[in-house]
Amino acid sequence: MNKKSILWILLDSIFVIVFNVIFFFIIGPDHNGTAWVSYAFIMLAYILLVFTPVMIHQSEFKAIFGFSLYSVGAFYFLVELIVGTVFILVSDVPFKVALLVHIILFAIYAVILISNIIANAKTAEVEVTRKQDLQYVKEASTRLRGIMDGISDKRLKKQVEKAYDIIYASPTGTNMQAKDTEYQILQMIRQTETAVSVQDNNQIADLSERIINLANERNRLIALNR
Image (cartoon, rainbow, N blue to C red):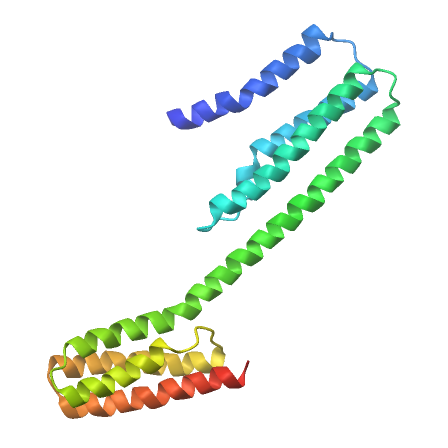
């Protein structure tokens, strides 16, 4: 265990120590059922708040997801602390009433927390899909730009530029049918890179024309499935 972990444990323990000292020594050791159930739910709320990081979806949006879950946990803990403290100090609150209130508060917290976790997971999935959709356009257009830089023949360069313009302006969304075509396009771009390295102009012309046709076909497939 490193120094940072130890410091976090000590920080998280401050409330537990202070609250228990107040509950057992300042208020006194003798408590009724209402006080004990309130104590238990306050401790539960704090434990859930401390362990919020475990519930955060691991992604590049971790900070945003964490903020929403921490907000829910902190609000629940604050409400429990206030309500629980009132029940502890006002000893004539019936046990069943106190228990019912705590259960309702926990249920509300659980529903909001789970809803946030589900929403965060869906957001992360959408972002992963969006990045995958962008990969074809980004990779293909970047490599075609490199190919253009390696061609001196103006006619060939113009033809490759046409392929570049079509792909660069292509929709980023994709589907299973289009993915096969995207794979073929990327394979042809690799072949074109090889042709440029050996200055095979005939091969470059043939491949760039096929890339143009496949890029248009790919875009047509996406348009048909929208």
